[in-house]
Amino acid sequence: MALFLILANRICDGLDGALARIQGITDAGGFLDVSLDFVFYSLIPFGFVLAAPDQNAIAGAFLIFSFVGTGTSFLAFAIMAGKRNIDNPVYKHKSLYYMSGLTEGTETIGCFVAFCLFPQHFAIIAYVFGAACWFTTFTRIYSGFHTLNGHKI
Image (tube, rainbow, N blue to C red):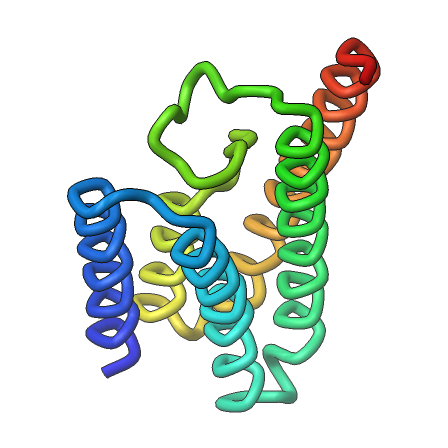
């Protein structure tokens, strides 16, 4: 059931993005999309923690902590890039500057699918994916700092 709901959520997320490109990208839509994505991303590991706290609590907390790193590095750069009018050369049809990384939406959904298919291995999957998230966080911080440092106001 969880796998079905995860996939349904992602289909709806893709459809709203397609609709936004047809009707026009708005700041309100971009805000709503990113906000709901991050809430959704933290909800999945939290659900596995609730399902089996003795086995999953530490790994789930680590993964949510990792998502805080990827999310804040993503959003902080987007805010500063927007403030400085730095355009994204790769993702021109996004409502904010989308700084890529090793762990993005597709990889995150793949991780969530793995959780559903192999729930007995939640902890190891969460630790491995969390470590990959920290790699993304550190590379975003490094790249973001140097990009912003090179674009003086």
